[in-house]
Image (cartoon, rainbow, N blue to C red; front, top):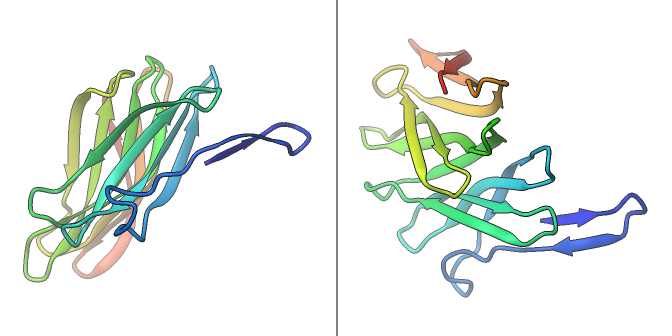
Length: 169
């Protein structure tokens, strides 16, 4: 993560090297959001020692100081990816992405979680469009009342279709 001024001068930078910097080789940020006060939230995933990727979320103050970090590890030791993130009007942070689930074969579901401005879990939602079919979230938006709109795709009878789903605050 890097922040530059209007003259393209580096103001601050931060990196994340996974749960074990010597063993972790794949940590990625995929989504970023900035609130009205300049606070930043970054979502992605981190490589873990359990042969899976865990959803990763970190907040930063406008001056680059790290805030809180949340890592979600699937209890079945499967992967999760954070793909989109946004700030609610109350300072909360919502992250959406994909969670792999157990099945034959394993399949993916939409995963959505809301955190308070202090990093406490407020709620978690998932969307499973059908048994053994894949569903993924690729973006989100939060309106003035805190409702969350998630977009991505859902698979129905083998066909991928656009998913647009609204969640109440």
